[in-house]
Length: 206
Image (tube, rainbow, N blue to C red):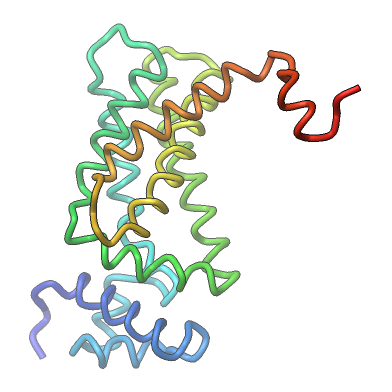
């Protein structure tokens, strides 16, 4: 077999997702993934260290996109403006043809604790990358980390909505912008008292 295989990485990702969905993550072996992709085990390990990492193949690209977009944001900008620029760059890569794949990916990850832990680690790394880029722009802590974490939270909430919408009524970028605005609006209420009507509905009224 030739050393170079066209689209090998993408083929392995799709083969792994197919097998995980069909027979479960634990029951699937690296050999089976390679066979389904029409590749060798050696080719698999040339691209991924283990089967878990196949589903997180885009992490390094996402980290780079976020960091580069924060760095390239026209200055001076606020931390949130830089975060918005980074989210625009990231969500632009999630075209409609990726929606079906993302919809299939979510239940596979949700169904296995090891994959959930790896997804949480990816989320942390994305936030760290953006926070680091914000610090490079001179934004101090904890403002840099708070802005980054808020942005990543908005992205992931929007991603779940986007992947669950087969009709494709909104782009991931639109959903992320709306979700970030909603989170910011919620934050603005954190130092406010509970309205009387809410107290009554929750049974906390006098």
